[in-house]
Amino acid sequence: MSDTTPAGWYPAPHAGNELRYWDGTAWHAAPAYLPAGTAASPGIPSPSGPVLPPYASAAGMPPAYPPYAGGPVQPSRPVALGVTALSIGIAAIVLGWIPFLGLVVAIAGAVFGAIALVRRQPKPLALTGTILSGVGLVLACLATFSVLSLIWNGSTTDYSYNSDQDYGSAPEDPESPAVPDLEPYAPETGPGSIGEPLSLPYVRETGSGTEYTAEVRIVDEDATDEVSSWNSLNTAATDGYRYVLVEMSVTSMAPDGVPAAFPTYDLSLATDDGGVYPYSFVVAGDDTTLLRDAGTIAEGDTASGLVAYLVPDDATDFLLTDLSGYYAF
Image (cartoon, rainbow, N blue to C red; front, side, top):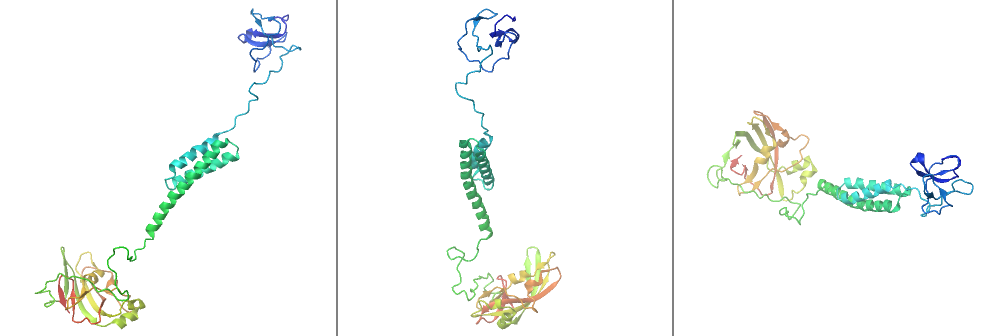
C-alpha cells in the first residue's frame, strides 16, 4: 500500500488478503468481529480490483463493533461437582441393596450434591444427584440393618423350651424330674439279665479293645441331705426323689487315655422292676470329688470319685447297667 491510499478496509497482502484496516500509513490488526452485510462507504477501490466496503469512522479509525445479536456471552458455569453428584446418586440407587458398600456410596453422593448446591453449580444436576443419593441411603440403611439384625439374632438365639415348637414333651410338673425313658437292650434271661446280673468290675469293651474297667459300690442309698448341703442348686426338682451316691474307681486301658466323664455317661442305676436312671448333674462340695471332675485318666492310671443318681423315693434293689447288661453290686 502507498501513503497516498486513503484510509479504509482493504485485503492485506501480508496477511493472506485478510480484510484489515489501513489508516493511510499502516495496517491495523484484524478485528475480533466484522459484521457481515455492512453497507459500503462510497466506493474505495481495493488494490486488488473490486470495490470493498470500507468501514471507517469519520476520524479515519475503525469504529467500535456493534454488539452480538444474541446479547453478551456469559462465562460458562462449572458443572463438575453437579455431574459427579448425579453420577454417584445413580450408583447409590443401583448399589443400595448391597450392605455397607451402598451406604458408603450413598453418603458420598449426598456430600457431593450438597457441595455442588453450595457452590451454585447447575441446580438440576446437583439437586437430582442429592435426591437420588438420599433414596440410595435409605435402601442401603435397610439392607445394612437387616444384615446386622441377622447377625445379632444368630448370636442371641434363645434355645430354651418353647411349647409351640416340637422339642419333645415337657414335664407336666417342672418341680419334679421327668422319669427317664430308657429302653435297655439287655437280655431278658440268662447272664446279664435282671434276674441273673453279671458281677463287677465292669469292663468297657470297644472295637479296638478294652477301654476301661470300673469298680463300683453304693456309698449311700439316701444321700439327699448330704448332696443338698453341698449347694442349694442340688435341692431343685427333688420332690418325690432322692439322691443315691455311688463311688467309682476307673482304670484306663486306652493308649490315649479315657475322659473321666465317660463312665458317668455309660453307667446308669437300675432297679429290679426295669427302671433305669442315668447320673444326675450336681454341684460338688468343697471336700467332695466327683468322678467327672477327674479329667483324662491316662493308660494304666486309676481315678476315683462319686457319682450321684436321682431315683424315686420308693426305688429299691439297685443294679448297675450300661443298657446292654445288668451288674450286681
